[in-house]
Length: 397
Ligand SMILES: [Fe+2]
Ligand SMILES: [Fe+2]
View 1 (cartoon, protein in one colour):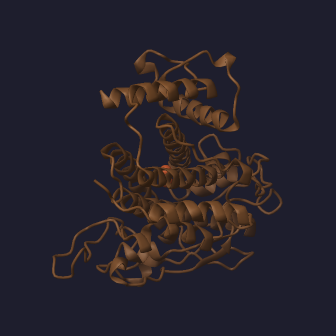
View 2 (view 1 turned 90 degrees about the horizontal axis):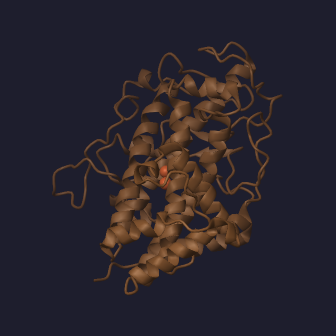
């Protein structure tokens, strides 16, 4: 019963024309429409074409409250879900930028071609990863509303500039992709038998600092140029380097989600909140595994060796190093120390301690990545407050 009520709280429909739309409601509806378009899962429920307006959310909220009047979440569970919702809004914002330019319906053919040099299915994966993040954000906020809680709204902070390149919409953004530091320590960490939760620090196999992950404008990288392997002109090399940086950034973002969700789940009290965190977390891990594989193709033959003529960044041939800490096809997590060094090595997601993979650590990693370059103090205050509140939660019974 519990599950059915929870589901109906999300998909119930009302007369959408009689509603007053809040920006959050419109946002949720837009996100849901995107999700419905891809999955068509409402069809199976016999309510194809249903919309989730602000009004229907309010009705859904009312129904949920009636059905589950005793189902108020603990303050701690709310804090976990709110941080997750904020993280998903951030993820959704950056993935939307990638999708506009390099997704399967993206508007920058040269960027799409350069990404496709990593794997022919990259544009489809980018589109689907974007849908997944939109669905995570919309679901978490709808769930919070269904439990009588305030959703997380970051719309006031969508002020960062868009790319000027063909394909990018001229919108205010939450996140910056025009100049990034991409921490590659995850690459070594997942090939190592050591675990950062035992205090070990890892260094990436090379360094990506102050590099664009999306094309900046059409003069820098013409949108209709070919992208041969290897690149034949400086502009082709520039675009390939940008796509390669994106490939590593995808994995960086998703390994963060892969660690974040287990740390949050560990603190959940309500079994349904635990179920949500574990279930979404599983998809973050799926994303990470995918991007880990694709990013390696930028540093393996035949693509390895690309140098950005503007910045000098070179993507080396990591397989030429003959080291298991670099080998590009060692993408499945190496068994490592876990819980106690006296126990045998175990193949696990790592880190999963709050101080290394929790909410504050996630915001710090994203900040160091320059993902929030140009964001306001009010933005940092809000996301850091949500992060501290989530990390402070202790599991209750
Ligand atoms: Fe997500
Ligand atoms: Fe994700």
